[in-house]
Length: 277
Image 1 (tube, rainbow, N blue to C red):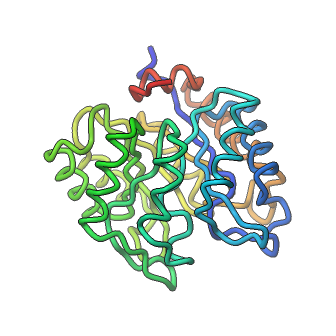
Image 2: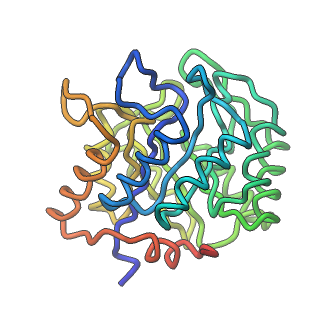
């Protein structure tokens, strides 16, 4: 049954990894699309997309998002999910700039950050009015929000959005553990977050750095889903840089097979998440 299948999301770029940290992180639209396609071939069902400008800095450019979208679509039917943060903690981007690629390109999914927080050495601003505006805009555009929860209170904020009719079932949550300023990456904290989720909820774990695969393994056991990729973790194993995002996807699939979890295709994931296709 689809409900038992494991949805693997790949996040190939993000806003923070640089060529100084790893020579393998994709930065140009061509590189990002190529990494997404390789990850799709490896078994990923969703691609979480950020873009970078010509200097490798986080960007909100609609043109760049559209180019990545088109390049991926030329190759495969992986579910494309745009970031609505687009490096906001680094760039201080306006609400309009963050929302524009989602409204103009209309990917199947987009991330929805529901709370302001300290994010490393910066502040990640997501005021309540902005959050509701983003949720309403995604609803009107037919874009499925994925609620990013960096701490327990963020789940409660999402539940309020559900009560206001701004999020529609089946709900999709990301439980992010290990960001400096967010909830610490412990098994106890993951279990606590899972227990607090609303009904009719599809969830994945995002473990930061060396916690990516330990927490992903636990999520698989609990029936949840996983996100891997260089946005969150650049290492395949201790001291060994991943040479591609596909290597991280392959590792996740190897763990899933050992645990008896069948991996979802993009078509499976669309049915599970109620996407338009």
